[in-house]
Length: 280
Length: 329
Image (cartoon, rainbow over all chains, first blue to last red; front, side, top):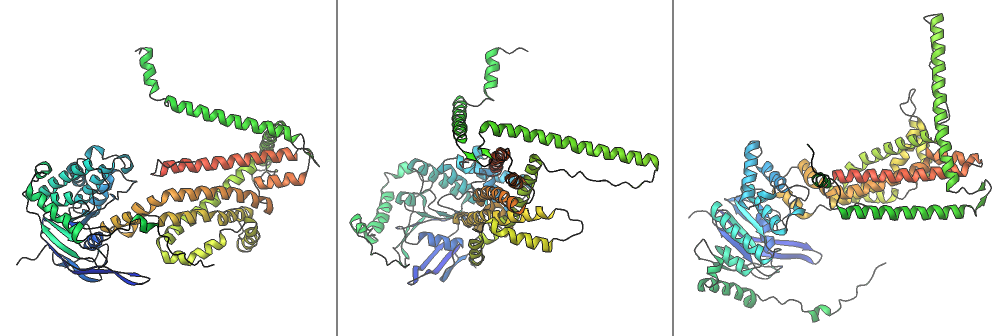
């Protein structure tokens, strides 16, 4: 059997707290093939971002580990490019310079100056942002910033694209537009993608498999739902498609029936916390 | 070529500020003038009420007159200096004519420094002290800000020394400098070194603290970007840490420069180091009928220079800082 591209085995992490270790995540097992699009979905606080940060190498696992091409991941690196939730562009650099920083870092000594410039422009064109390459992040909209964030990640020519709720902060129309661009880019480049999302439609529309996580503490993978809808996918056609709605139903029932999270209601929140003894 | 008037006007319009901006400027100018006029009027009316041992407290008119007296004194002193050198030159020429290998002694002119020369001394001193403070505080702030351990180690010391008044440092600095700074042919006068060091000791804290806070305030997301890109230490500092710390660093530098200027005047007064502070002190000791007016001139000039120094820093900040939207006040 062929070894998987990415393998998470027995992955777990604990954080030390004043009341002893807090087990955030345990027993996460997942195998991802090259070119696959995986969505991680679950309630907030279930450790989705923790999984992503472990794969990125930004966090260190307490148990188990992450293998990429059979090699252990223990530090961040540009071959696992991260698209951050809040774009994380450097505000003092222009759009072009932001991508350039990544390109210079990854392709130093491999590409000549002109090649680098072409490559930066190519990636900005991929997300349709080359018209704004001299603007600074403060001068462009949220959706544009997120696109530049994606361009920066793509420009690293990563083996994997790790996206932490990339469209979470955007309005619905912009989000739909960017989802379509992402699908096109992924079809073109065949990147392996792991994306965190809160949005059931987004997960079903984009993914090859949806990984549904149980509630924390000690969160783990609850169910994995393969989505076998043919590509390219069209959101308008799918809106009436029975299979699509069946998948949606399964995710919704996982989230709201099996893993229903009891949020503190206002009546509970109104209860005053115990007064703390003040020390002089 | 004779462009029609409207075309020329619309050409010129592009270089003029917007109409609304012009209005805003003129309004601000008008309000500032009103403020100053009211102040001068109150000063004029109240000054007449105050009788001191040196006569009436000077009003705006006497102070303006003293200003022109100070300008005249400066011109006369310059003329005297020129005359002195000319006489010396003539003497030397005559001596050379008598015997070609006459031994010539070049004597420097030793006049009393005028108000404007004191001003120049003060400016040079404050800028040197401030530059020294910045050269120490910015790199130290970056290093301390990067390491939580170093910060814990150094923070008590910073908190301890930050509130110390220049008047407390001055005797120590004076004694230490006179003990250690003993060379045959010094580059700088000892009083200059004392003033500079006092200014440095008092003014480095705001820059240091603000740089530390600025370096600490680098967003964790940007740090993660840096880690994903595997930027090396130096590139990380240059591309991520320094730019994000710059706005706060400038806040610190502006505070430092303000403190440096205040400290310098006090130090010059107390230590009899040359400069505007010494001018004020000398006039105070002098106690002539003009002294109060002359001190008033000094007060206004000190304020004006402080204001200009702050504007200078602001200009520098708007040139260097990436954050053009930051409200600069």
